[in-house]
Image 1 (spheres, helix red, strand yellow):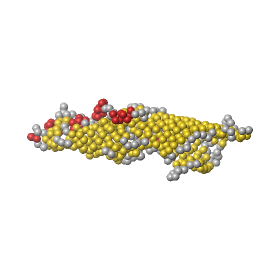
Image 2: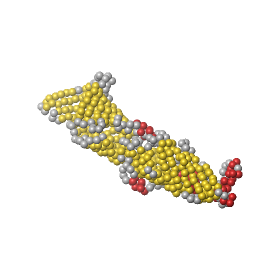
Image 3: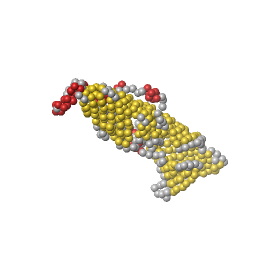
Image 4: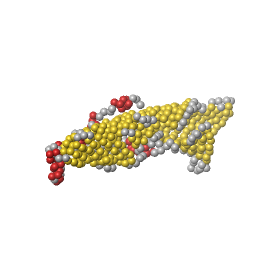
Length: 489
């Protein structure tokens, strides 16, 4: 290993030459030209050269006031071909094979880059390159292996470029073009992604981002990203528009159906958004199925999801969520669903208990706990806002009624026309997704023992966590979200 150092303006360069034998480094003539030819003619000196080199590694470090960020570079082979003269200046080509460049502090890198830089003079050059793998982010499980190709043209102090990147199957494709000002160290560009469509039994998020595998079982719908990027002094800024079109995702313990919206990405590394982002959701199932959701949120560094407010519907009533911070890295989190004006009759219809009906409205809180990835509900309670009626008249007697004896027969008789003074529902859901819905009532049946006061506790076993899927047939995206999606990205 041979190490050398130098300072180039605002950059410090330290370099080491790597080869299989640490003490040797080869410079060879190109196949079609000599290593070096020097001439002296009437117009002054000139040099022609054709040089091939072996492996090389070096570190480029920008000198800043507070910190320095290294760029580690190495390549397998290179070639330098060209001509220089006192009269015409320099013109030629630099070729590099199997180059690897890594910004370890940012988790950004390129691998297997083959490039060619053709130059003429000090201010005119054109770069053509292909990259076998592009890496954005330190965690490689969150992005697929990407290939990239593109060109860059330098004229004086500016560089214009156009790049295209895609995954191995070319399902995920990006185009990026822009301009960079060398004199001021800043630039801007535009990125566009071809729409990605997820299908049952077809393309899934885990195929593009392996890290999503344990979290998303299946997805359908379309996602696309387009917008502007800018950078200055090592900092990146973005104004990207991510469109979600009828996107549905389901995981081990939750499901979101028909997500629509236009989300602005203010930064990519780390991911963040401005406040006030809005999406519409046809249905959200967090152990309790809710529909017609409208969610306002932002994403902060972490990333952390900040729910600013959310409104949904449950059995003709309203469910709201106040300011809530969700950190995916935290082992335990809680979302409190505030429920009001829920129709008891509609809720009992969702439970699909044959012959059970009721009147009245419910309100209360449903605490949804996300415990190490599992959705748990513990101690949820909804209370009737006033007196009402409850009736149980099944089309056929429940199975096992004879074995239950006279006590069960009396309960069924009392529930034929029950007038309650107090009623409340409790809901619990364990880590395995098993839900327990209990109905507690206090009141009387005027025709049962002359209206003697009765208190009953009933367990409801039905399809509360599945039946709402049928109610989405008439769902439409709210006008507010639809108008945002209609604006071109």
